[in-house]
Image 1 (cartoon, rainbow, N blue to C red):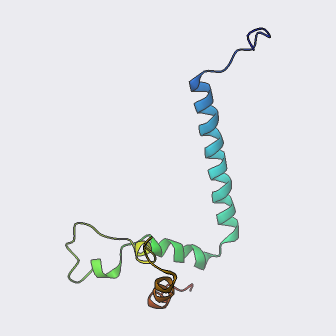
Image 2 (spheres, rainbow, N blue to C red):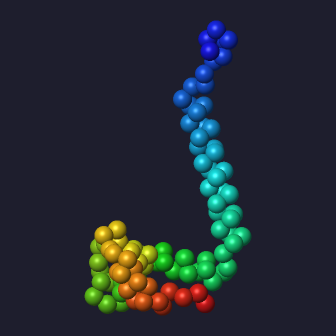
Image 3 (cartoon, rainbow, N blue to C red):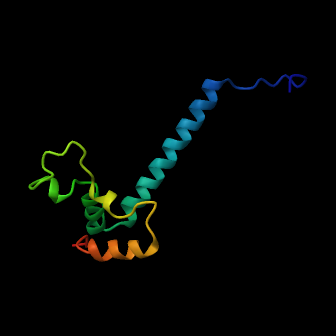
Length: 96
């Protein structure tokens, strides 16, 4: 490359290109989600990012570590059968 007098861009230039590309891709993904999900589906997803009702009133109200509803759906060590149990257990997560 030096014989052809081509200079390689520095780290900062590469980092900027990669960051800009990732941001643009994220925008495309967000736009796709916005366009393809119904309002009910968006509300359902939003509800999974809230704390469970047990933290509002009850024994866990003063808990230091509060878990979002989405964390209750699946854990990595669970089997497929546990996933089906979770589906039955959390069938209250329905689209309105």
